[in-house]
Each structure stands twice: as C-alpha cells, then as structure tokens.
Image 1 (cartoon, rainbow, N blue to C red):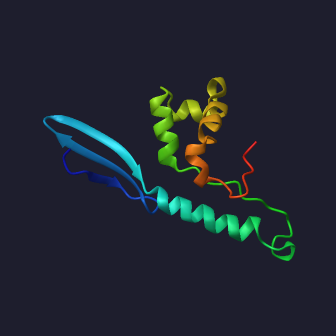
Image 2 (cartoon, rainbow, N blue to C red; image 1 turned 30 degrees about the vertical axis):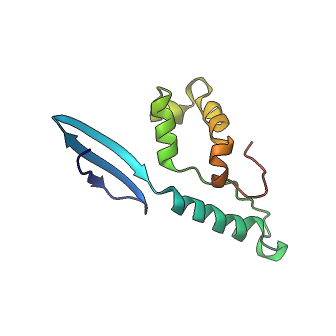
Length: 116
C-alpha cells in the first residue's frame, strides 16, 4: 500500500491517515494499543491498589477502551458512531459483550472484575 499521510494529530499513538494507490483512495485510523495497556496498568496500580488513605472516596478503575477498537467494531458490524452514541437498539450492550472477551483482557483491571 502507498505511504500513509497523516490527516490530524491527536492523542499520542492515535492517528487518522489517508493514502492513494492505483487510483483508489483509502483513509483509516490507527492507534498504538501498547500505550493504552501501559496506561491501564498504571491506573490499576494507582487507584485499585491504593491504600484506604490514598483513595478515600473509594474510586475504582475499570479499564480503557481505545477509540480505534470502537471504530473498528462499529465499521465491521455496520453501525455508525452516531448510532453507537445514541445507543440505537442496544448497540452499546452488544459492544460491551464483544469487548469483554478474552481477546481484550489487557484493557481492563487486573483482578478480573468486569464492567457492568
């Protein structure tokens, strides 16, 4: 494929891009998931394993879902981000069932508790 040309900046490791090859145009989204996994590890240690004095409000960290994962799921299932945002037909519940599979376990807290 032709060289990807970045379209806009954003969060570190997150990039929208455009490419052309053989008269066809492509645009896409890529994201470095490793930085998200490191963030999940840091936040899990900082919040969920903090002593009572350091977390007086009892906050819990569940995990982080990269935007690229959500966009990819919406595209592959024929949904738009607008439909997902409005939760048409229970789309968010379908996505949550998908994201809580073993494939994405590194995006959630380490004690095995899942989102409700």
